[in-house]
Length: 155
Image (cartoon, rainbow, N blue to C red):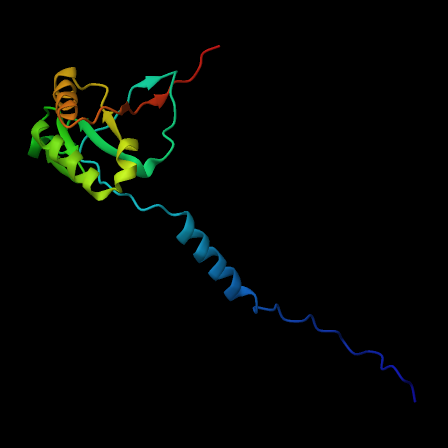
């Protein structure tokens, strides 16, 4: 009697699905961590100007954004440039209370670090931008930055 049997076919083992739940949860956690929820829905057209000497803002949680541009829904709001604060249109007079509200939400030690970033459409005239700057000056929000896109260097 032989110890080994010959002629028996070898079946390929089934693919193990034991690690499949681990992979699914790993992908789920990756997307949960890497996804950023949009804070503001833009209601103005935004085609930012380009610049070569730009600098990134360091702490974006201390930045208040003001959007200025022509409304996306021109049939409803017209084509004149408008100011957007958070998710609503505003007038230049609303900028001061908006900044004061943002200051009230921060700790007192972080208030001097607050920056106001103006995202202005390149086709917008300077009149509305000047009005916003005057309102910012009234509430002593003097740390202002203009958001631009980086211009490609020509060789």
